[in-house]
Amino acid sequence: MKNITFCIASAKNEKDYTTLLLNSLKKHTQLENHEILIFIDSDNQNTYEHLLKLKPSFPNLRIHRNETGFPIGSQRNVSIMFHHATNPVVCYLQSDMVAGKDLDKHISKNIDRNTVLSCARIEPPLHPGSPEKIVKDFGITPDEFKFDEFDKFVNELQKENRPNMDGHFAPFAVYKSTWFEQLGGFDTQSRCSREDSDMILRMKMCGLNTIQSWNACVYHFTCVSSRGNDWFKQNESADKKNMLQTKADQEELRRFIRKWGFFGHEYKPKYNTSLFIDIDTGVDIQLLKSLEPYFNKIYLNDQDVVQELYNQTKFDTYYYANRRWNYTTEHWESIIEGFNPVEFGKRIVYANDFEIISSNDIVISTTMYDLLKNINSQEVQGFIMNNNVVFEQLLEQENYQGNYNLYNFDVIVNKLEDINKLHKNASQYLVPNMNTYIFK
Image (tube, rainbow, N blue to C red; front, top):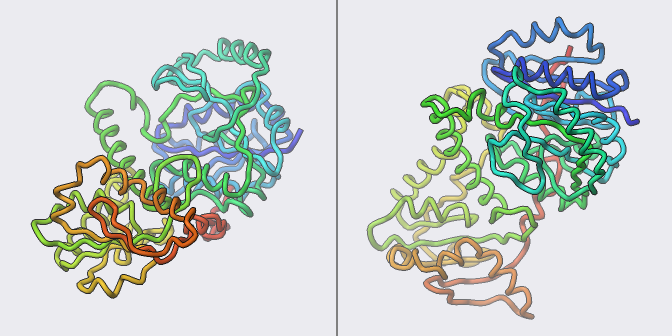
């Protein structure tokens, strides 16, 4: 049995969920061999005081309460908890989960320093089924959770001894040294979603095994941590939350594409592309916004358009997430550097002389008129969204450098170097000042 630190993220309206999770760990693991850290990111139920009363029953429990008035977010607090763990293996659990029988035993059996182990999720039928989880209803709130029926189901599941499968999601366990030395932590650019997808690509870059164990399993009430209680109910309050989350998720997808050049879980190279657009007719800002994530830089020969595109793109990148987390503008401006912000002033640039940028690695040029005429073409759409695949194919040529004409784009290829390799450096993802967070 390996010594494990179970790291639990808790927030508003999650006191009962957190208590249920603690009780399941006590029931289903050899808790005296392990440690529990809880990061209370926000609290409206006196969760901290409640957990203090439970500490005599959980002698290895330590708690941190965020007292800033603003959520820190799991993208940072996971690494903070891992940093403060005293055991070699760490396991991240969301508060809306219930530990299955012998969770620690099955983590210990399947983990090594080259593996990130995900625990199978058993979920109520609130989302469509998928191969990596089991849809089975044991309740959608702690009050109605059917503990005995869940235990019986887990016993039968573990008797099946299903083979491990590839995959990654929460809850997961990893060696603390592997997390910090090879991965660094989540990319805090991702504020509301997509951090797991980003992490999957970086795990593969590092040669880590991403394994899911069916025997190490949890019940997951789903989305309580991200959307709050009663998110699934058909009422105006829940609808508003889901609409805001959808807008935030859309921006996270754009953020992911901006970083990697595509969305997916299989690694692809990305090249340093510059798109030059001659604004020769009426501009479509929404079209320009849709193009922006797929290129490293966009050059425009109209300063007013540059400014407007900059303003709208920057607004989108923080506004929905800030509303989602109830951040004021003042608070966001005081902490923005901790979220690896994109410097849009270096991505959206004024250029009136094409020759100045013609020596960039890859220069793609077109006119606003041609874009408006051809943007609905399947070939043009395909090139925009998959331009890195096109350039990767050029590497098959002995001499790829030169001028090309692709649909309504003129292309100059000077250099093809995969810049996605830069995302492997773990140090860029480390959360600063982790020792300032005290667990008691």
